Length: 447
Image 1 (cartoon, rainbow, N blue to C red):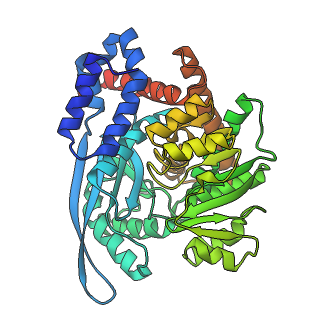
Image 2 (cartoon, helix red, strand yellow):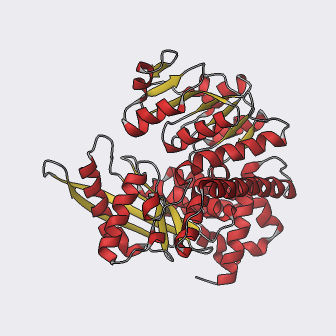
């Protein structure tokens, strides 16, 4: 359904005001398409420029990050932090360190985060940040100095009740530790709730590293159950081989599925007997090497350089690498191989053209703002523990995560049905998130 004149005018204005930011335009267009029927039924939701306010960040911070490498050479990178909406609570969202990061990238991620965070039912708003710094190949000392330089500026804009960053691509427990150490040094406060994704000994939460991958699988499990399937005996393909992909692989294996492929920036790893989580962890997390090293350790595995995993026959798929990694041709290949369900482990990894293919083929499709909400949900649980200065067990945290993911699935399913799109998780996620945030914005007034 095309946008009506009012919504189209808003979208065109957003494109005009935010040039050269295609990912942000794409994310806004998806939401506007989903909520347009709701706006037609309830035009009061457009009063007081609510949509314009929703699509305009509350604040955008861009700053210079200057640091030195191990040889004493100075480098200059650009840092970003976008606080998009604090209607439901402090800004919440990760930091991404990757050479591809731009303001447009961060804005699209922060915009998505508004709706994702709303779906969790926790009191957290939407934000995101990062830098065009590439940690690949850098020493621990270089990464520490960069993180310290980045936090020297960022600390002015964050805090437990203002903005709470976490990790994302290129930012794991090591980087969060360096960032929190510098925050503590500058502020002279041990505000554990100022960042999440921390190590356990400085206020981190059990199950936080696992949360996004585990959560995506819980959402996938719920989608399959709705269609009378289970994960037992299913063949799965996962893109990426970072934190999300690795723990999705672990949980899939625990629930009876077999993951036969994953990928990184250099190509695709395939093992018909099932990829071993322990060896993948050793290669990627401990040795920090590329996937081609895996085949040196496992004789049944094969590595295909510059290949993506989407032409490998599978029942379920979890794109967990980066945005727009799965296009129309990939979706056609997956559909021809009788894919049953797909859950987005990354943020917006499927193009609009790919999503159309999945919908026309009646493949269960879990959008990222619902399917990968487990990471931020567990970050919210970490904030609760920090505020109470307590620690939960792994079992309790994982159980709470599973409950949240099944609740998100139920919310999306019911909302989609209530708005005439049964089984459409995109509509369910966007409309449910929008109604929650819109209600809060109206309560707060023109702020």
